[in-house]
Length: 259
Length: 106
Length: 258
Image 1 (cartoon, rainbow over the protein chains, first blue to last red):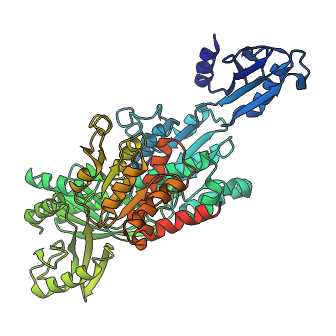
Image 2 (image 1 turned 90 degrees about the vertical axis):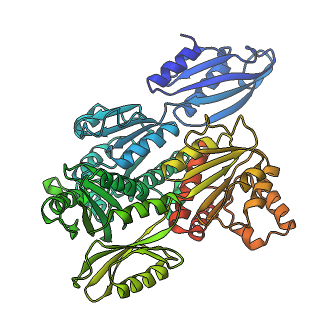
Image 3 (image 1 turned 180 degrees about the vertical axis):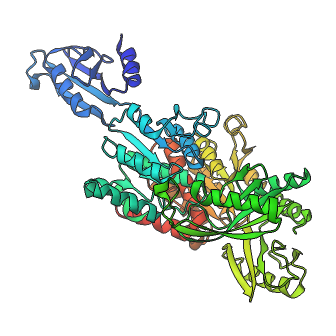
């Protein structure tokens, strides 16, 4: 596979990679502009930007970017890093990450609109509901996947990488808690749970009694969504999507305090 | 569904002489899932249009509407108490009370 | 029992984009007044339908007119034993998007999801096309002509996201003195202050300029066109539900903490 096929494969299998591209090559730098190298998460490489010490440096640098959303511009004087050939090299490194996952538990009105919006915001969207009447492709053509299955069974089969966003809005409070209890133990970037204050307080108390630490409980976004006075299911979906974006773009800390 | 869609659908049913019940949330205390003014239409076959908040209280409203449509044949004000902890029995816990006005259009 | 008439009147009024109060008798200890009977109260105080009891209709009308500014839907016991529900029916708020570029596409879609009737205008027919904006009203004409063809009212939302600050300025100048629920202006601090200064020089009162929402959208760190469109949509919802003052205060507070 060439580099581009590797990138596609990495995206498909949800593994992060970093692409390094030489954008400036001076003197006797080993490779010309446009040379590319792909660094995989285990440190192995595809292609080369010239081997030797500089390549080692770039691989190390790539490992720090792996799985993040960052990109980086680096410039090396070859002499400085002990290479015999004089010259310099500028390399642009971009982290290619898996598409963030959005799991929506509950295929009601809000879940349906949220799945549509989530898709437009470049999430890999999966909607899960234990009612086949609600969770089907006819009703929900937008998400990548629609699962009609018992919530616990569905969760067992789902992957939970670090950049997983989960919104819990099933039609039954008992199910909401069931789902929350399971996914709180897994890696996540965002968990939002719908429900009235009393409903939610009960769930959180149950978690506490189970021994879940306060920091984790505090990380649960509930009441869910930014405080824009959302009223209708579509408005609530927008408020949840806005909260998710604030988290994805690390703008949420200030947000939580006020909105 | 918007008010517009609800009233259009209602007019449609009237035109076709299909009996239907209009349920409107007229008061909500505590934390309830939908706002005052939210409407839902319920047909005699149990089919519904619009929503007054999904699971929470909707079943209570649906059965009251059917009663009002099929036997009472006059409007009724019903109270959906969502504070009872039905959660353990697989029900819904919303933590609030709603008053819903159900009126038959026969 | 409610006549078919009043429901079709409600429908007519809704399709004429009118805002009105629909009062319904919920319970009555007076046999002459049947629960379910309805009164439509217009903004000007005229009524349609009725409870069959003149005096009651009059008190219902008075209450409806008083409540009209807040438009808060509520249940009231208007006299002993007579409970009436006051429902305010308003039609879809209108969103006018000036500028049919890459943010306009997701914005139109999100705004439609939350119930706005969307009109998109741009002077470039390639951009302002029905194909790019399905289910929207699309006007391909120069901005001023297009805006003048649209009647604005207190439930109109205007988002100005044209391709250049001259166009932003002309759109803003055209709408800023008209009644609107919201005007949002996109752009960098420099671009925005350029536009606002230009309007101030043209004699637009400062107070009116202060109502313009800029930077546009709620602060969620939006970067991609879709994210920006979402942040604008959230702001539209916030203004529609909570009013412009509160929406601005919240956004400013979040931005102020940076």
